Length: 422
Image 1 (tube, rainbow, N blue to C red):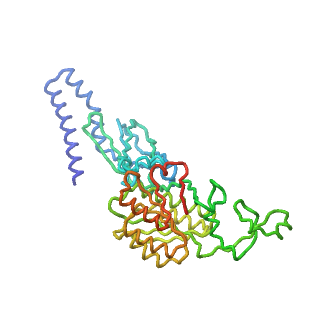
Image 2: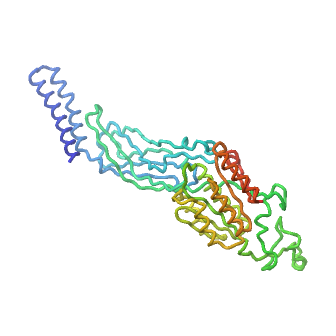
Image 3: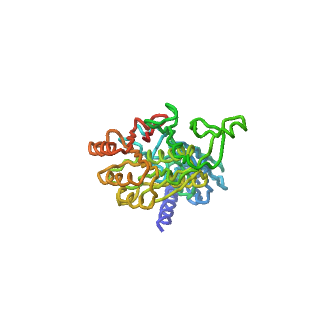
């Protein structure tokens, strides 16, 4: 009804101007008045034709260079407009309507420069393209989405505006065109180190290899750097004229569980949470390359458990989950962690990734330590936002024998993130 009233109003206005100019020519007479009337007649006809011209019948499509990218990458987009009737148009404005999920700009490591001010990474994405169609039936408008943030982003609508030269007639139509961009977490190289018992100074530590049970041999394989001297099978080495080592059974009690704090809390640093997501995926890849038993437990509003065990399909499910997960839930992480510990077997190596520590967390870690073979904490926060209270808790945890890694923007902006596990 509203659109119909607007259409009638605009048509009445154009007809009124045409009648007014015709009346002026009739009463005034002379060459000049009739010249004005016939000179403006094509313009008025164009206005009336534009009023009846159905832009809603245009076919608008969108082409993406990539549908799946890493967080921080760019996506090239091309908007295409097809129309059957080549009606002359003076201008056309095409606007991409972006979802709220794309109102952030996350680069790769450089985003951590603003870890103490994550609101600076919020942007107002606006893409408007002006073209002059004339009689063209096919039009293309390219643009680029820079620094795509992690998550699933649904591009759903394109707004098209056009009108006449004087601005008397304006037409607008929204075309609902759905396309999805999936930005998976960006992985950072992680270097696991131990203070003692390393095989080589500056190389990957013995953490993953120490998970081996050297009591039950299940097979043999060729020697690899880092294998112990006692693992060599001398008989097989003599037969094959090369160094052969024994392959040992992987004990269930020496699994590695990475626990992600996906709970929401007051004053959560969203950029620190993003770092936790990226480090979690990076840790899984790093440990998986050297040990077959690794699992992820994401503790949020609902707890998600992913046993991976060198399975490519399960690894892909983990990546899909980490792409979508956001901090949720009203219950504290410490309370939910206590409940989950009852479901996890004893003797498991645990790596906890969190952006928040408090007194309850410290008490929970004391209970976790009693059931675990080793507990490593990755506390991620901007250096200027770590309070004295949090520093005291970290020192107390270290005094109790818990390995705590404090990762700030300084460590996260390096090419390789060092994680101490002992």
